[in-house]
Length: 106
Image 1: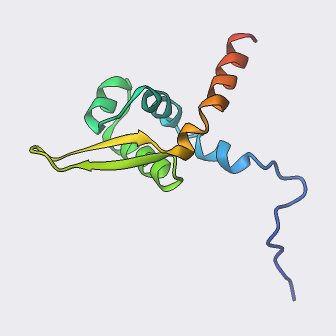
Image 2 (image 1 turned 45 degrees about the vertical axis):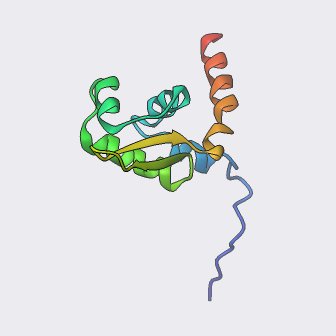
């Protein structure tokens, strides 16, 4: 009989889950654009060269499910959806700034 250990493995990095979440093809760009203000789907398609509808949709959904983006339905005509950084997402801004600093100085 085997039992599963529910605690994290000793050699597993605590940040591994976050790094995996942010490792998607367009997620860092979406995060950076969301830092500047609300995002709309078609705006992302224009701003991210080479992106397609499916990849942007998947990235937005995953970022929203993880709690980094908030999805706001604007019930004006025409109906539209905006994505903004959640409080959890905003808490990662200093982490991204440190990564930018590190990459610029190496």
